[in-house]
Length: 541
Image 1: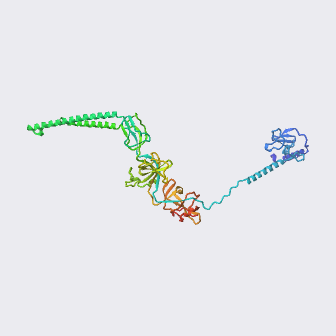
Image 2: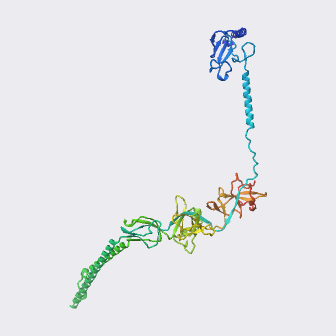
Image 3: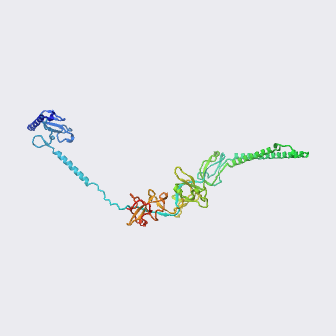
């Protein structure tokens, strides 16, 4: 049977503990301790006292073994009884005067009370110093919205676009013959201006003159040879007639005259002389043409973009000497999306270069080309010339070509209220970035609204007057978009009344029929409760 269940063992342990208590009471308080013996748990048994080393957080005011050593805890124990009382108060503690070595831990209670009071005080301070949120006014019954009045329109819609001003014709200037440059026009410099027919470059022509003179001499010699051949042929034909007549007078018939070879009559010789003369004349024409090509003339009125020629330079045939472009007309290629291009009347019936439009008769589509210069805006009148019969694969746009007939005329100021501009009006310069306004086909009736009023799904938030003052009802109306152009949108007006107010600000969770707050301007809104009936998707608030 285990020792824990043996009654005799328990009795022996109880007696041992009683003896230990009796021994502790009889030992004098100042008696000398027994020799030191090791104690269990890492302490030192000193007679009837056992000294234990405690962790730092459990140390009291006991005397340390050394200056930095741990404090000691003395525990009473019978020297020879293993079952004696092993734990007591800390050394140096308060003595209750009984003389039995027991101590009261009053400092621990004071420390716990101080910590508790400090925690309560800190919590109270945090609560008193907490930040209180500022009182917020209650939310309004209806949100405030900003509105704008839709502008009705019946005139033609203006189609806007942009592009680069390009010359109507631009070529590389070159000579058709080679030689050394003998003369260069003073205006043949970058930016120079010239007129049609002016000699821009001239080459040395001595060799070409000599060649032309040799060709003239050859022509003269071939003419003499032709005359000789003609005379010899005439003599041969005359002799043949005499022979035939003589044979007929001797009793023969003319039909009995012997056949004569064409060579005898000089016909091949005459044809050869004529061919030689024609070849000589062709050579003379080539020589004169080469001589004429030593001068390079301007093919049109224009300007010089760049040049690469100077006096004394030897050039080869077809070598580019300068880059020139026409000053007569300029073009602006405007890429347009299909919805914009569809508003241009007769776009696909316009033949290229027809200033009268489709079929002539003055039906061309007018356009305004404008550029910015010196902080001002200047414009030129033009017209839609043609369109390119393909869609750009990268931009998916249709290129519409607008032509300006007189770009050298100074442009007229735009937006200056008729006052004289502070800068001299410029011509329409090639390479300028220009904006183009094309007069499109006018629909029957439409509205112009800001882009901020158009909502997702091509719908608008229209206002209808409510019974309460400064209140209106929001109506969600779907519209048909005609044209999107930057900050403005043109829509069909078949579902909106005249003078309708449209919401441009944002509304959280808008519903059809909800009440909104507006300014006094909302009094001009129509009293129709449901603009665009049949398209409402919500119910009134």
